[in-house]
Each structure stands twice: as C-alpha cells, then as structure tokens.
Amino acid sequence: MASLFRTIRFDGETLRDLGVNDDGTLWNPNGYSADRVRAAVADAEETLRERRKVSAAKGAVTNKRRRDKRIHDIAKKIIGGANLSSTSCVCCGRALTDPETIERGIGPECWSHVLEAIEESRR
Ligand SMILES: [Zn+2]
Image (tube, rainbow, N blue to C red; front, side, top):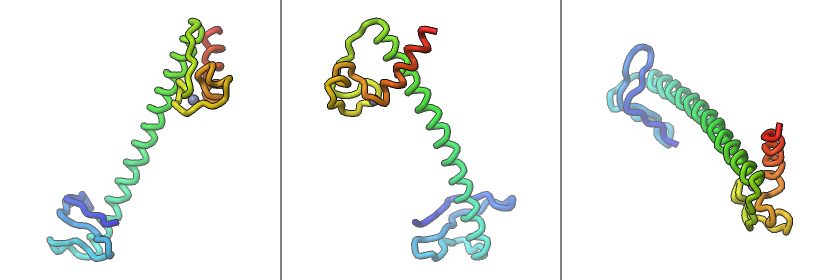
C-alpha cells in the first residue's frame, strides 16, 4: 500500500509531501534525496505502528472493563431474581440454541464469568 505523508519530522527537520507509492517509486515533489525519503518514511511508518499498538492495547483494556461491568450488572440482576430468558446471550449477544441457556439467557462461556461475579458479590 502507498505510504504518503504530508509531514515527517526526521533528524530534527520537517520534511513535507513525501512517501512511497504502490509501485515502490517515491512521491518526492520537493526533491529530497531518495535515501532520506526512504529512511524518513520507514521511520514514520514505525511510529505509526507503535501508536496503533498502544491504542489497540488501550482498546483491549477498555473492552475488558466494559465486559466486566456488564457481567457484574447481570450478576446483580440475577441475584435480584430477574428473569433474563432470551434466545441471545444477554452478555455478548451470541445466539442461544440450547433450552437451558435460553432459559437463563446466558451462554455457557459468559455464564462461567457471571457465576464468578455472583460468587464475588457474596463474599
Ligand atoms: Zn455470552
């Protein structure tokens, strides 16, 4: 995929409008040296990869926190005697086909987490 940048900070200098096209040729209207363009683009791509990794890790933490909260809320409802009967899991939305899971409205995998949350809240 083409990798084009409006600006890249590289070696203490700001380079403008540079990149590597799909066919491997350079986009280099400002006439920087080819080596410099390739090095700066490689560096910028590495920075982007790092940023994506960091934000993916943050996203995973956020997702886990949301899931934990959902599980906790469902555990509270069950303790309160709510009927959650449903043909899709109230935790994750997956379709339920087994009569026992439909009756409780929670799939087997989520159920183990909900049970843990119920145990925890009783401690
Ligand atoms: Zn589920």
